[in-house]
Image (cartoon, rainbow, N blue to C red; front, top):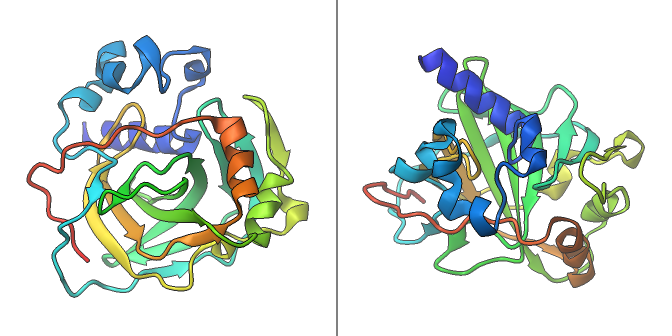
Length: 247
């Protein structure tokens, strides 16, 4: 059963925020009768969206000070494709990008975007959030979340804007853009840590979350380019329940 759940979670993450092929036909969405409040009733596989106790996203507040291990990130690797899956736009990675944490190696599979942010920090929403999605060989999942705020023009993000897949099912080649995952990270990798879930069906739990404290500046025009394609694609905040947030 553990292997089955891990396999299901990886399949969901790899698909983007994450969907099986039939999601594109309206199985779930961000509004109406297939919106977040109904996800847990749409399919039996989505039941954790309804009954889970460690669901994401959350409001990152009341964090407890702790001695956290620095994130050992190796993102000096190019993104290869940029896909619109009908729920988000995601950059799929070439092999080699990794995160080392808790004595384990997590492979960076892809990174995708939400407008506005899904997680909040002290109840503050950001205009956009990126999720860098990782998996170990055994199917353990980790997400590094990066917030974006309106400020100066961001040349790295512009490489994605210039190659934006504007319609569901469209996949564009990012190799000529020479975009590396590290180009979208802030200078500081200080983070908040908590246990959570996928933020889309099947809402599988057991995901390590690392929300970076420092946001990345992008221009308002660049944010609007993502909003125009994705619309509002953030799941509402979920109860923290008994979880402890570390900083």
